[in-house]
Structures are given as structure tokens and as C-alpha cells.
Length: 91
Image (cartoon, rainbow, N blue to C red):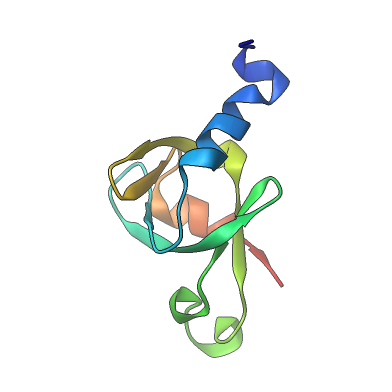
């Protein structure tokens, strides 16, 4: 078993550690969202953290590639919160 970070095995291991209602924070400690669930290679965030205006009521997704690690009940990203928020996908 095993495998390097380049083969996607790291994302699978991280995905298995991510649970519903975990807080997603940027590398700078800024709150980005709350985990709804892992959907493939992305984290689906809850609608309550979707923002306001045109973002309100939409689910947002963050790529597992942005996850630096899981610490307790927090998912820490490799990018600062404002950068990660700009890289979210809407559905």
C-alpha cells in the first residue's frame, strides 16, 4: 500500500478524515465554510455558509487539492481564506 502525493492517494486519505459539520479554515485561520460532505474530489460546503447576494442559497465546493490537513474538527487549507473563497465552485 502507500503511494505518493502525486498519485491522488493523499486526497483519498484526507477525504476519509473529513466529516460533516467540520469547519473549513484557510491557512491564515479565516473561516471559509462548514463541511456538508465530501463529493468526489471536492468538499461540499453547507448552504448556511454560502454568503449573501448572488451567492446566497447555493452550495459551494472546494477542491480536495487545496486541503493541507485535518486538525481535530477543522479542515485546514493550503491557501489563505480569501484566496480559497475565490477558488470555490458554485452549484
